[in-house]
View 1 (cartoon, rainbow, N blue to C red):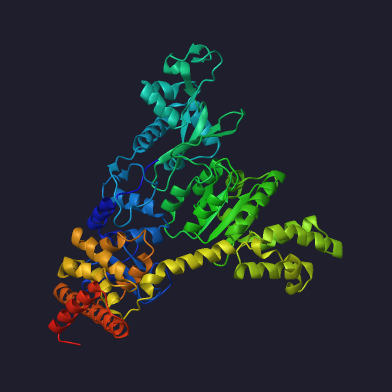
View 2 (tube, rainbow, N blue to C red):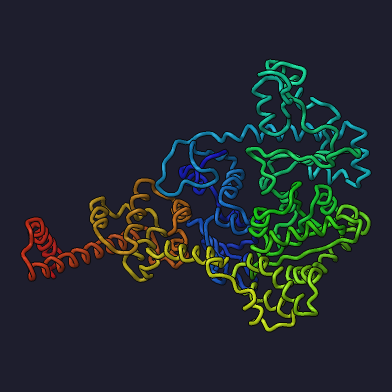
Length: 625
């Protein structure tokens, strides 16, 4: 697995990126003096309040308060996790993202961390899978039988090209012969899930019909044979695995890549890359079950369809979906198996149900799946069915109602017993309260009575982890937030954010003296000074990105979005000098008063006497007490 992204690379990325270009490719920016403005892409407005500063490489909306760097915009607008935003931005600049050896995967290093940079060890695997995908695409064009099958299934040439649909020939070693000429190549094919090692049937080192020292064709065989191939792509469009649909009536009907360093089927959603290409303003995801369902829906214009990869819906699928959209519609075949899958999906979805999110369930007519139905009635009529999808609350009540007769007391008690473990999965909040109201109405009970019946021990309160996280977050931000916007420390930090070069106005001796202070926020000020003096930053954005992984990041972005205290670099340096001088003077006075007060109550030791003498001399130099 790839390690952490070095901070030096993130610095280079931010220094080379142009936030105006990044945001301007998604939002219609208009020049306004030295900055740019637009209607905010994150909330509805008619008068532009969204501003982008090319000098600071920072954006801010005065309407909704959203703000950040180019990376932050990609994370917010495209709903990307940080590592993927880095990959996206690097790709635009023609850079390859390096990773550190021996560190946690998928994160930045954060300010001040160190490590040796190493190459991304997954890069060759990505390249190999891309080449195999091209090989399958070429094979489909050459195979009359596979082409006829794709046409029979209703796939157009444009759709085949868009989804890079291919064909794995009816051979045990097409891929192995083409890409496995050496043991190293064979190992790579095996790591990518493209070939399978033959089962051992003899003694040590023997395989079916061969010895362990035999050729690659003796030891391995192709995983995919005589199948229509669907490359599975990540959010950057890189092939990470494959799904294969058998052309005939063989089993299994669908075969997926195994778990690899790149592919984890419990986390990936097929068609997500194509959905994001088709819809920039993504509001909803339609979650279906098969590759062909996704491809045919997109072909018919229903371009928000994605699919799980041969597995039931998992919490990871839902986490990923709700990072991108606020509404998920589950779509299931109208048979018994489809309804069973829907009930399992509901149980996985309950912990994700909360205010601001919609979870709905669409059931198709018996004997139909999305592939067949959209082919028969077209995209518009299929899309209209989405308006009839059942909200999670209605589906939950309807399903429980089929299992318990609420016309009598025993049935109501059974209904509550069935509902209790489901309702306990929902985090406390407005949504849970509204769902309780709906369940109480179905039972014909006052909600207070239902709550009494559902009462569970406090130790089993499912909301506790969420509350604890909230407290942890507030505690982490307290040291900087406690300073208050008007304090000298906050002023100094704000000056450094807006004018990073001002850090050179503070001497090393002053930094050392600041370190002796015991005030909220002073540690952040010192860290900023050390950081900017050791590695100057050309913009506010670069400074902020060094702090992204630290708890103070949010507060720093708030200060960064405030109006600058001065107009230019020279004034910032002067203001920073004065602020630090006043801070040190106040600390000198405070310590002097402590020692004088102590001397009145008891004799000072020798070190304290020397300190008092030195402080008195220093105080006289700055004008006396």
